[in-house]
Amino acid sequence: MGGKVGVIGLGIMGSAIATNLVRGGFSVAGYDVVAERRQLVAERGVTPAASARAVAEASDVVITTLPSAAALHDTVEGADGLVASGRRGLIVVECSTLPIRDKERARDALAAAEIVLLDCPLSGTGAQAAVKDLVVYGSGDRAAYDRCIPVFDGFSRSAYYLGAFGNGSKMKFVANLLVAIHNVSAAEAFVLGMKAGLDPETIYKVVGDGAGSSRMFQVRGPMMVKGDYADATMKIEVWQKDMKIIGEFAAELGCPTPLFSASASIYTAALAQGHGKEDTASVCAVLERLADLHRQA
Image (cartoon, rainbow, N blue to C red; front, side, top):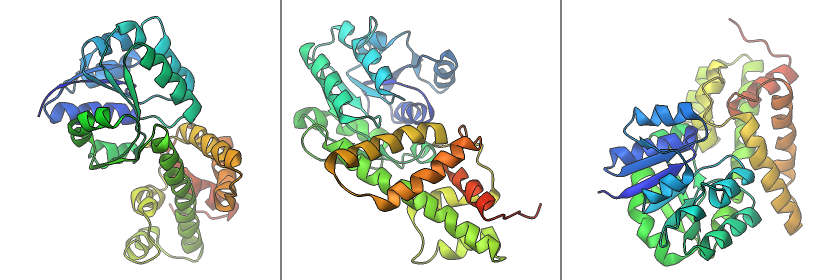
């Protein structure tokens, strides 16, 4: 395996992707606006770059994992952005969860520079990214997607081609709707069990082995067992962005999402109660507070 890949956005997800690509034999260039993140991945074998443009100049495929639409537009259209690189034939794999209209704007700007943008959101947490347990929801130009399959294999366990540009994001919104609901339902189950006097570790072991389990129960259950949410794989403050995007997408379609809407208030409460920097599993702490549950030290 080999090839030149760039990663722009070196947060929890991007740094894990870059690290796994290095392990897979790729030459990886990385950029993030935060200097400390560039230094961190440099220690893992990634070549730090001074800008998005520099990443493009050093790569055949560039992966972007960004926190906002503004960050995407700056990465694409900024003075030191991807368009400015002049890298005709470059493929950009956009893996962020963002409104489709913003990805379409980026696609069109890059197309004018003869650069292809694929819409490829990812399913999985930061912890899953660290062990290549991600799923790629790919959409856009099929030939460009096929060229990227070896790259996907370098950081994910599976990839699906879903057709026209934007279908990847649509599938991600569907998946994240379930993540939002399952995470809160897992927390609700833990709180009910603990309130009834059951040991949380036993709840995790027994329920996790039965029909009531879910992937979110398995992934975030250990944090709920410990009541420790500091080692975030998805921060509440970042997740709020995803919740807003899904809500607006459903509203535009006129599609009711009663369970998703019910879960949204729990995440909002978590943010208000100071859990913004913590993992989304901290909704368990919110429900404990509502239940007047006090764990034994």
